[in-house]
Image 1 (cartoon, rainbow, N blue to C red):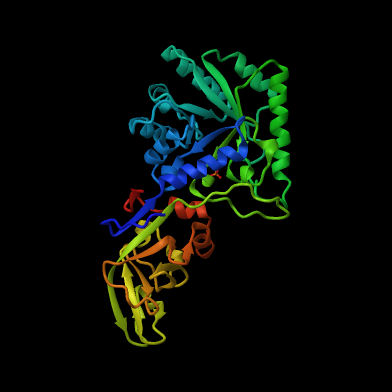
Image 2: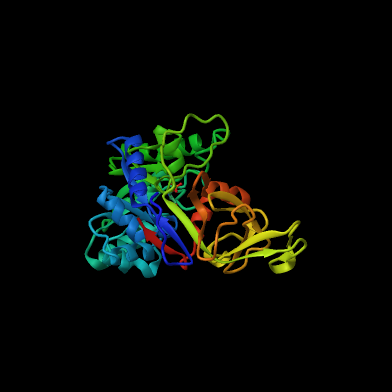
Length: 379
Ligand SMILES: *Cc1c(COP(=O)(O)O)cnc(C)c1O
């Protein structure tokens, strides 16, 4: 990634080109017969949904996927038109009008919701296109209704059109667990029963990043939903997994400026609670980013950042707006210089999966936690 500095205490640099490359890589792995719905929920996993959506639509993405009606409406208001937007979290009764106004396509999770969508369609003189989500065993969103009940609901709802059938895997990267195969068998049973009854559905989709990356081709159908991969990640596998097919790289670097640099004597405590005490005279740096920016408090006395091209430890408790680091090995740095909280600098690199391991969480959580206060800068 091109090295630039921006006049913010803490900011992320997002490489448009890397997002585009990751998207193209997903498209080439699944091949031309499979539509890639680009998942830009949660502000594109912290990368900024409007700009990421512009990049993806310029690359030819025909479908974007968000979590809520509000996220979909924001994209339309930001000028994202001409692409379909799937709202994976469905809609609540007060959001029916917004579905029509912003041309959003809900994933529906129950037969009752199909009837609600039908009522919305009837009142607006429109037909609401929707994707029906099947709970194939994850036990989260999705209907558990059997095929005859689904067929009954379809027959009763002329103002709603079933355009997609979808499900979601709970453990696609886990090859020690048969759950993905069980979920697929259930899902295929529903798809086949509807097909036998003459219901043809344009889009069938089940796979997100891990089922793409580990090549679970029987789960690709004619559409996949890629999120994490667009941002450069595939989860590590468990068990006896096949070779990973995706060649994606992180698109984001997170920087913070040094507000102060100073030398402290042996024995000096650092930060709230004095949870770190200098074992020798040390040079420390105070960065202008803390847990309010998304630096996990759990990284206190455990995490690292990159300063002067080297990984250096975080000292003491992370504060709301500040993080103290050890500059003993990066003594040339001065106030105003930058450290890298996530990304690469010199030979050193630190990605969201490494940070997540130390913080006791997952890479998704690290990316989505970079707060709105941290400016997004696109390169
Ligand atoms: C978030 C989400 C995705 C994308 O998952 P990734 O692992 O980030 O690719 C796909 N489908 C649903 C239903 C989701 O909620």
